[in-house]
Image 1 (cartoon, rainbow, N blue to C red):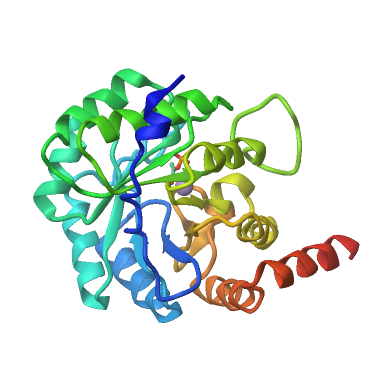
Image 2: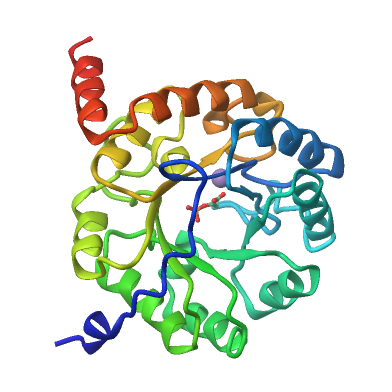
Length: 278
Ligand code: PEP
Ligand code: MN
């Protein structure tokens, strides 16, 4: 029996929101001071709770945009400060953690390609020992619940008390409409095993394209997820990463309005079936 599952304390009411669900939004990558500033100014009008941006972005293939690097952290923090919102950024190494802590980044997240590797997660956990910053753990890129829970447990054992999980879909051999298959039973099993762990959904990476995002977001809320992480960019078609899935701030605003309108599970279920009938 895994004792961690029984020990996991309710330390996780940290992901609070002025809305009925938490909303984290921002560009896939921070590309320039101007881009993060203008995107955040627009996004903040939608009542989001936290701003996201990737600073280190090695892609599947080398030679593409690899992220602005640690010089961008200051711009991210300043953009958040200007609108009074906390900011979050992906970390994959102890050096990333150190740079984020130095710039006062409020929350960290561990990406899908890092959660898959216990060596990397342990190195990050060790570098966080004694620092109780909130950490969000994306599911590993492969559909393996044990690796996801293992990553969460490594952080918990390092003394991190504010943890949440992010469901961003899985690489599978199934060819469906999604970029990464949602395999909903995996996050739902995680919810069952760790009921006190907040779990948010990242429809942007699941979908890979804008037109599917609303339905996946509604499904997540209908399943009782605690929030959403959504990618938004002032000029998505020119984005240096994940161009097809990023929403214009106006589209984000519209989506949030629709999600709030459907906020009771009952209404969400009805909306979903109405959409599927179309
Ligand atoms: C991201 O959030 O931009 C990202 C790279 O996510 P993932 O680790 O889910 O691929
Ligand atoms: Mn992205």
